[in-house]
Amino acid sequence: MNLFRSEEHVARWLNGREPGATITSGKLCELAQAWWGDRLAADWRPRTRDESQAILERLGLTGEFWQLP
Amino acid sequence: MEDLTLRNLVYRRFVELGRAPTLDELGTDEAAVRRLHEAHMLVLEPDRPEIRMANPFSGVPTPHRVEAAGRSWFANCAWDAFGIPAALGVDGHISSSCPDCGEPIEVDVVDRRPDPAEDVFHVLVPARSWWDDIVFT
Image 1: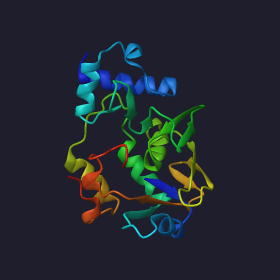
Image 2: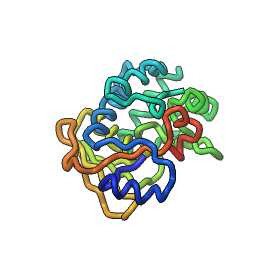
Image 3: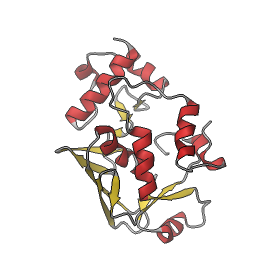
């Protein structure tokens, strides 16, 4: 899971491999906030699979690629 | 020590130390941290009871360095790098590099937004397989 300078850099790095998913760093920032924002809270509890999936869906990260097991 | 109490202590010590705490520093034993590993609350090294990850923090050096609140940590990946300021609730600075060209990527996180915002984030592994090999992911 890496930052690249642009989508062209992603494509070159993949070198013919099947691409995964690419999002903007702005969307990544939102995702990180939603995913990790509570990680140091004293009342932290593990999220359920459905709660994690709901975070992805709220951010528009839907489809087969973003489906958690 | 209860599992959640130990888990919270791991995270607190990670923040304070800027690195993974040792079992001695936690005052615990291998069986206890292994339970947290099995529950995906942290990740141990495959061959020894040392903490490799307490996501978003990394116990080993990586290409993703984060400075925030006057301290610094390594993150496991770019997602986790943005996760450290998020978890701390502060602004931060991320130093990474483009895996394609090797050029440095420096990003400030200010008020939960990246500056600059031109870089892109690529996830190679689909979500269903993230925990199959979390170190590779």
